[in-house]
Image (cartoon, rainbow, N blue to C red; front, side, top):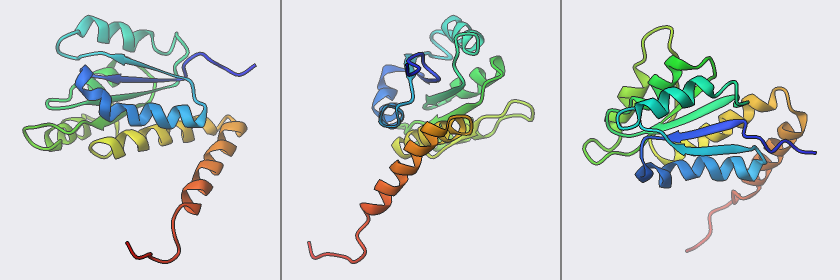
Length: 164
């Protein structure tokens, strides 16, 4: 029987981050990786953040993907409270087009790592692929699904340009 307990946690600072973070959920679903998605704000729901991060490993999660915009403290604060790998996704912000989010997530002090991806949906999709690749180190079936995903991606690229 296949594992249906979530292995990856997808968290975001607010509901408005879901259109970006849904790219991660879609990739994980396509690859058959069980996940959960939650809204966990570092600023508005700090108790929820503490509970989520501190219980993640005990609940069976292996990796957390954390997306946040603006001040973007969610990935770093999560990483400070769990031994699990945290992948940070900067969400595009109105003020600085996501650069503020990127800088906030990538500039972590030594000892509290956050693997930071690109701004926006591409970053969320790549965070999911990276999470799946990490899990596939111990899961040959998942490794095969990732290989098939990449082969399909390659096959979809035309060899020659076509007239529009």
